[in-house]
Amino acid sequence: MPSIQELVKGVKSTDRASLGRAITLIESNLPDHRELAQQLLAELLPASGSAHRVGITGVPGVGKSTFIETLGTNLTSLGHRVAVLTVDPTSSRTGGSILGDKTRMASLANHPSAFVRPSPTSGELGGVNRMTRETMLICEAAGFDVVLVETVGVGQSETVVADMVDFFLVLMLPGAGDELQGIKKGILELADMIAVNKADGDNAQAAASAAREYEIALHLTAPTSPLWSPPVLTCAGLTGAGVDELWTQVQEHQRLLSDAGELDRRREEQTVRWMWSMLDDRLIEGLRTHSRVKSLLPEMESQVRSGQTTPVSAVDRLIHAFLSD
Image (cartoon, rainbow, N blue to C red; front, side, top):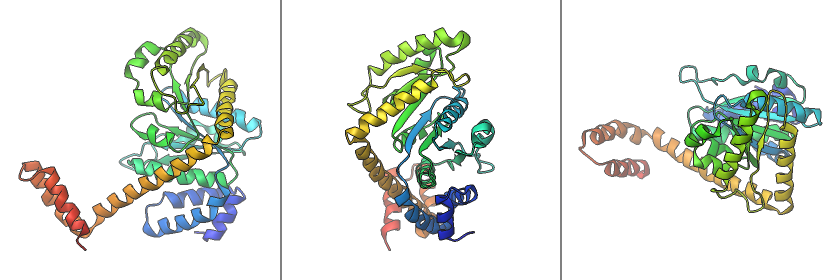
């Protein structure tokens, strides 16, 4: 393992090996590694924060990977340096990412101005929160000026990712009639834009119809900012149709919020909420690993299961054991 100063120097010079080692370090749950990771982040933090952070979500099959590869390729052709961080589900058997994003975005992953990194969730939203946020900061320190964060599109990871980016894009499929029945209202409330993907060929008319349905649905939700009304666009990641127009809207959103100072305020609030989220995670971790709590847990679970005690009483005993040092 290189020293922290060697890693800092390597990351700032965009050495891919150093970048990979730095991210592996912050993804480690070993106590010694966690301490080193915080030292690394403290050194890199002043060089971070300048990238445009965009979250992208959508149900499996909506074409996120193809869309992101097309968008990322377009951005690199304009001179941007693009990092793609993908929040993957974690295999319960191997502990690794299931989706294998470098195989899904092979062309972009091999581009000299791009970096693709799958981040396993470790089965916990706290893993998304800590690992993805810290990986984002490292990529920014390495000089990437656009960071795209992809969620798998299931569970609650969308809410976590939306709270760490400047702009949250929701990709939808044509066929809004069925889609609207199953969509979570909360996802619409998070959206800074909805894009109906795969709007090419025979799907073009269905995509246009779906876009109109989503525009109506958005009128029933409060926008994420009083300065911005989320637009609904159609695009095709496979052909690139509409992708440049979509990015123009993303840039306009950034301009409006930056000029009003709202983007800085939003990031400040996100950082404070990150602190509280990490505090919650650390307290839960400390509680679960506390020796007296660990020894008492099987008894409490058994008594709750059999009805000998209430969950509230069991929690009181566990908290008392935790605090009685």
